[in-house]
Length: 284
Image (cartoon, rainbow, N blue to C red; front, side, top):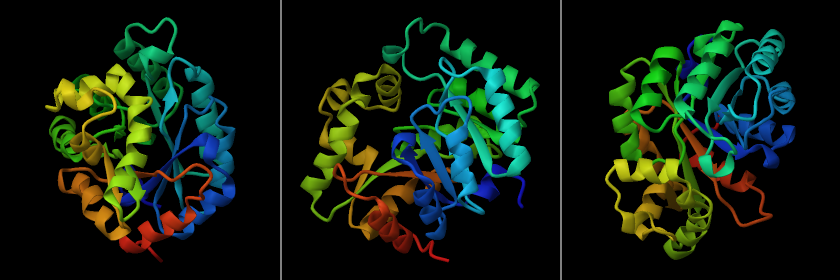
């Protein structure tokens, strides 16, 4: 098996909340040709669900996106990584991040807390090439290049990938998340995407600060978000129309894009995944 995270992941993967994931869905994602499954929603440090998803598949790389350093013990996390690596070598990427101050009691010194967590898991045996960081700004992007395999930014337009690549340098993995709505009607597609972006993300200052840093204005980020901002953060249209919007990250220096498909509540994502796989020519 290839050793680098870049080679293992391929160009496209799926991001989905851990609360919406089952082993059968992971197996279908693998069958469709996606290289990675990014497990959102701050999985606990025992990583039991991650191991179940890996066990249900044969080649899919499963990654956390991300484990919250305020909620997970780094020693337990490293021990769980060792257990999974022993049973399924090369199939797991550990993604960690600092979460949001609005949702964390006692949130302080986030960079130092993240760096300390990284130091512990590396010292406990997690290989650098199996570790990625949720990075938006320059300090954490540099940490991602210096102490980890690379970065897994969330809620970023394609332009962020250009900025991130300049900071990361040529060798680090860059795997941004990007939201997708498959709907040929632009008003419906934008509305569905806006509902997720507006709440909670336009109320979380780590994301809004990053967007301001990229040149978006206060008017753009003020809820419910400008049409231009929503269109930059959510690729909507037919599956074929979505393709150039998500491959723009690759054009700007990303290695892999984590696609978060947004559907109406209660609607299975599988038909949308199939459409995306076909449009991206992933079928094996």
